Length: 119
Length: 287
Image (tube, rainbow over all chains, first blue to last red; front, side, top):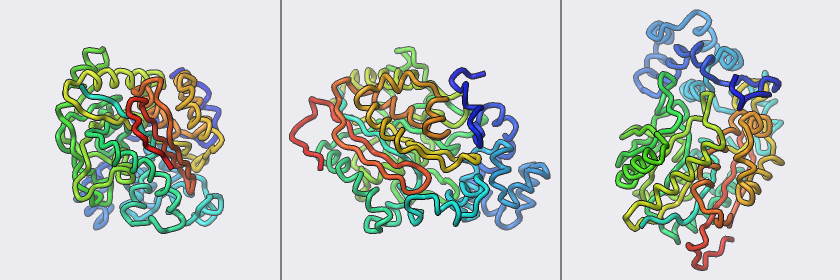
């Protein structure tokens, strides 16, 4: 156990990205990181199943990406910063992703913010 | 010899660069953000540094988890703007100061800071999201940068104490460069935010304001804290504040905070703080 992180396990609703999570979700995160390359984005837009095949994603990984199940993706071990690239490709904003993590609609989440228009 | 004029701590959330790119200066939702950077922009245009040394984090853009560097020093002469999923921002490629960076690589390694180096890799919003607010291109960038990447994505990430020591080693490296360069140190990231789980959207303005006080007045208190403390107080991504510690560690104990701004519109607390070294004073009056 990393002594720097002792106590973090007591925080609810927190999924720390560490080497174990990284190892578990390496294939998925590599697929998401691939959206930094225009050709990968084009393939995903035209034929998502072909993009999943190329990346060798499991049925569970495909379902989460297909349905943009943000909460499940984070629990699975996706890095937020890789998911952010999926968000950009799908036109989903960070506030909308955060709402997804919290199990809220975007409208519900924005009600909790100081300046809901600052998006 | 090179000298350090001061330092800047700043958030780097991508919406800062987005507000600049979309010309949101007069949008009341964004005006407070722009106002907060104006004194920093004015100070830089008066001081005219040659180089900004950036402590920043990559966001699984330049680097991927097949080999994620704990510390990596950019030693190139040019860095493309990275494509983060929608094509690169329409700003020119960043200009690197290869001479200073190569010297820093030698100095750091001989100071037992065995940093990895990278050449012409594209760089993401961790550097240029805030950069356009205080050092905008017109049309070229006003000067050069030396980027130093710090892993804050994949635990174990370097301790606050180690980042402070990296800052001190960078100070020694910069000050031993023989050319007469004016250098400003920048640390980006934070303040409170969390981007995962049901706790996502967590903020803590009280802690953020205490951090802004301690980083100037008593940084050793921040250096002694553990990551678990930063995460509890400022959210999982609040851990990015260690890059402010590296910046502060590269300044002298006599550096003074002469400006700060804080704005929390959405999910990330957007803060900027400007530090000035005493020898650099020449009548600059922050507003």
